[in-house]
Image 1 (tube, one colour):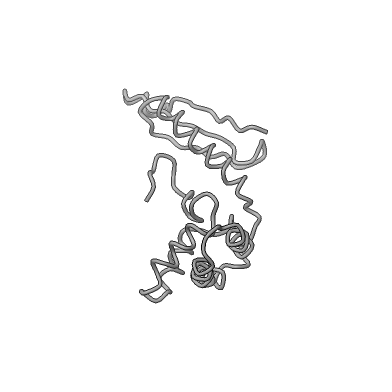
Image 2: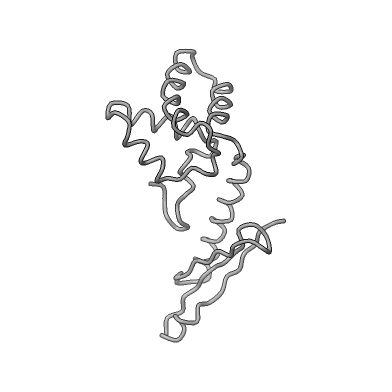
Length: 155
């Protein structure tokens, strides 16, 4: 089923003389949770934000959110076309993440957990291990990348 969502004018803003717009959609069909975001100054802004959110959901579904982090890391390293020494370094750095989250499904990981894990690493390895996790463990460009709210840019 293709998700479409809905754009509508907020009543509270109209009563105060300010027209505010919102969007809403269901996260997984008719019986699923309904998500609503509001406060947009135009219907076009609300529509663009809805489209970004729906595209994010589509990407998540294609990433294979049922894979564990360990499975995704192994798949990534197997198809990564670089020198063997680079694979060894990536494996070393990603082993830190798989030791912590290897049996967890990608869809279950949160930005907060990753941030706490990152702070548990020694300062000398923090940056490299985090970069390896972001580039190596997610086809979409990072495990936590897509956890932004609509309208936010890359961090």
